[in-house]
Image (cartoon, rainbow, N blue to C red; front, side):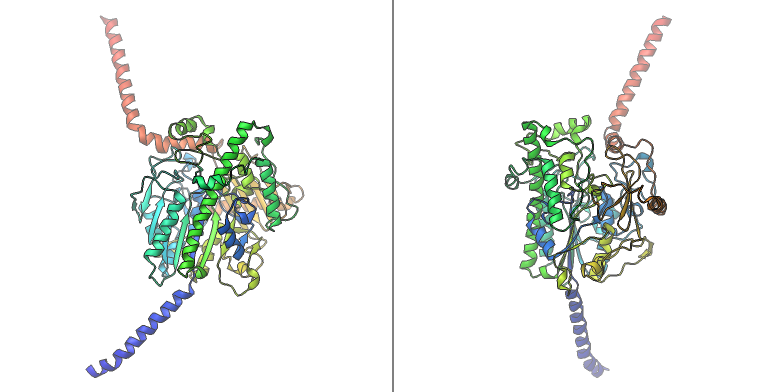
Length: 599
């Protein structure tokens, strides 16, 4: 028996070594994946999509990869992030609306938890199960419950800000009075943060720390970097702001036209693409006073600086991967979570009061620590040029954003610097990443839990040049958020937007030839117009979409939700004591008055 062990042991050792070598070979064939999510970038904000903003590193990825000119997301933060992580429509995955804008009558309803539910599995979990190292740094915004924090959703290492936004210079500073504090988590526990930082730099530093810590690992990695740039407040290092001094002195009307012309010249849009009509609330640049022009120009200078700063730090990550020999085995995916932000918190008295207590908005301070800046609807219309509307709305400017995928292994030389024009969607990202990693999605069951299947398609066939479209001309893709609706079918889009940018009625456009949504085709194509409305009704029912209550107004809803979710929990005891004292005083006064009458 001992003799047999001596004979078999060398063979067993050799077999183990062979298996280990085979395993290492498998890892080498699987690509690293870097998923980069910008916040509130408009369609033409990247240089490679028509912008004057200096984004050389993103442009480099675009030139060596594929740009998707017809890529769609949700019109606000968390719904997009929920689909980006799960590949499942946000009404099914639990984020049918954001906590900030959800009607109170929808709170807690199926599909409207405003956080991920237990019916979905994330791409990080599936990659982690298949042997990937998984990292996330940045804005999370899909749930702060223990079962929704990154460790429970498939990430080995994580540093995230759990809210819709925060200050970019001071880690403990709210950007609006929407929560009781800024919530930071490191590996699932409340994080001890430095008092000051610059958010973009910090997130890249964390990602680099993770990569360096695990540098000896032979496993591939998945790194999700979710930036706060360019979410309000707009803030950037001064050296980047100085580069754009005077760049926007000609105003938003000129910039809008320049962006449209550049996007056409780059081949992203048809040659005769009409410019989207501006809302009646649009303010002409030439109607402003010289003082107002200078102030508005500075706002856009800060916006551009914030974007370039993000690109700069992306360059640091790319440089590290080149230095470590990982760059050529890394796939980069870049997108924005929605179109440019047009909201002005100063327009509301309560918002203005809070901001004036906590921030400065002097022109010479914009972008710096303690200062608060936005771009507003006019610049937002330029950032999304030549598309219609912006963040929160279902027009193309709210939901069509840049997508760049670079580094996909391919034998076809003609796939370099390609532009793909067919309809694509954020739910296509998860199937694409799984396809890259050669990982099967579990379908309708994961670890004994019933889950929703994927609803998107892998983009690898069109990237490799093996297909011309991602979806068949008859496939339906529905959309809804806060009462703004859309349905895509082939080259056509049915859309309805609420006031003030819309009329709440259905309109029909061919978004391949008219991405600016300027020519309503409902009379020219009445049968299609009617059939797509029926398609939307079927889609909405299948996905559990709830009708918005009559008179819903998103701005008013933010105020109502702030009262319910923030101010009442914060001041309920103060109010109860106040009412108790008031009631006691009234009763005492009544008894005293009664006693005087009977005396």
